[in-house]
Image 1: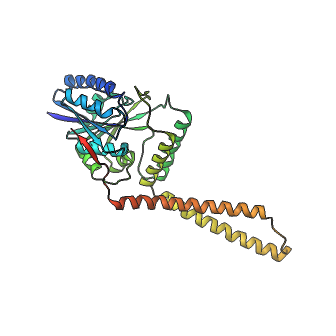
Image 2: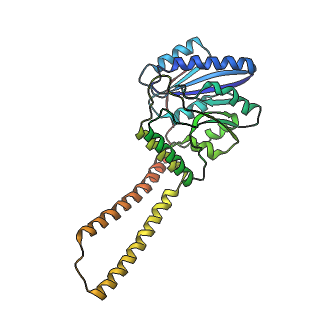
Image 3: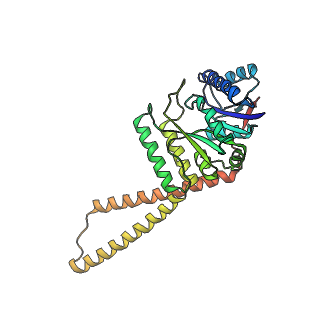
Length: 312
């Protein structure tokens, strides 16, 4: 028998868990007909939830021996949840899915066929529409993908979801990257391996509310840029060179103007504006350098990516 590990990160998803379990049972029934040699294990990662998520997982574990759960001591974030799930997965293949059913389980048989019969190491999904999302959020999401693909050599597919199935050797490659500041979408592209993409339209959450606010998404996008590109550092250096050149030109201009026309009194408002502008550029460059320095500082601490409070 082959084993397929289904990894489901959860954070305050008490309402969505029953719906997910019901839908995944339908998918398992399809597998029993089309892939009778494949068994399932369901690994739920409770990322420090504050509602009844852990109680719901314990109930599922008691009635279904295929259900396992890992509960963190606090909220470590979805990236830590994904990494923990891959560590606990015992299967020949592992699939990551969201519990809110925005990742349709109905695609799983075709994705499994791609990695077992067509020779791919990974089958991944991407949204072709963002129907239901706030327009401003969709706009900035598209801008982020365009920006990071220009700044980084690692290809990150626009609309890519965490929903993907992977071979054991791909899982092991991801687990070998033990960095604390994780950006899994970039890690997928960085390690390589052949991937088949499945496109689908955006699906609304089945229950509960999204945990990703605009601010959290903005910070997550900065994590991705810093993790997979050093271009911002080069940009800071180029800005320094550019303004040094501008300052030199201005000095030459002022000297020539003084020699030819004398030394008329210059306007102080324009001078203040220039000083504030240059100061802002300097602070921006210092912030870019500080961001990279902060990430290096966190990595040198060598802290664990997550801490387990309870598991079964």
